[in-house]
Amino acid sequence: MSQILTEIMTVLKDSNSLFNAEQDLMIRCQALIATALGQALEELDDLLIGETKYQEIVGKRERTLNFMCGAVTFKRRLVKLADKKYVFPLDRYLQLIPRSRFSPLMVEKVAKLASHSVLRTTALAVNLLTPLSISHQKVGQLYQAAGTQCEKQREETTLVNIEKKRRVPYLYLEGDAFCVALKAKQHHKNVFIHRLQLTEGISQNGQRRQTLNRHVFTGLNRQAVFNQVQDYLDQNYDLRATTMITGSDNGSGYEPSCFDELAVGAKKHEHFLDRYHLNRKIRVFK
Image (tube, rainbow, N blue to C red):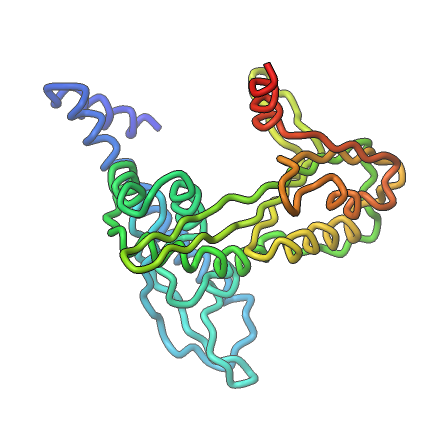
């Protein structure tokens, strides 16, 4: 930490303005994180090789992923399994999509930004706020792949079989869908990404608030996302003593009746209009 503080002080003293100092520090910090992340990925690959049952190591292959901190290049091993299949243990462990050059978080952030803008504006925002350089055509490709990537990344919420299901007094479930507008010269297409967030509440630690056991389920198919939540609840919770509190904008596919199915077996179910849409309705009727 002292070395980092010394370097920051050097940058501040050598710069003739705070603007230049901040710009220089951002570049250095992003480069530092990208380098450290690349090294960590290679160390994780070393660890996984020791745990993987393989027939032979074919060799190392290089891959570059664009994260929020910038491009990260790393090498990982390609192995031949006993069943003659070739896999990258690191890619499989991290559930990386083959040939994708963007991290799942990067794709999600671009998709959410695009739901409030057009391709060129989204590309400009990404280029200004991150070390990346992305064209509006590439943003369009990410739009088209967003749904598929969400479906594959949903494995982050892998269901875990547990001997004893959790009993909690309250569960909170929020649902919504956001539209990604695909705009080009010859066509216009809207893609809806569905999202459900499940938590056990919020803990207060001084001034900090943190959600408890938060799980997010996303995908292009609304019913598939609801099914994921249902499966997760069935395998992890005993709802007989639980009050299920759900919230949405009450739009198509997110009516209270849709959430009733997820609350089957719960002690009680209460559904509320989310704060944004509630306040908007209040303003309308004033």
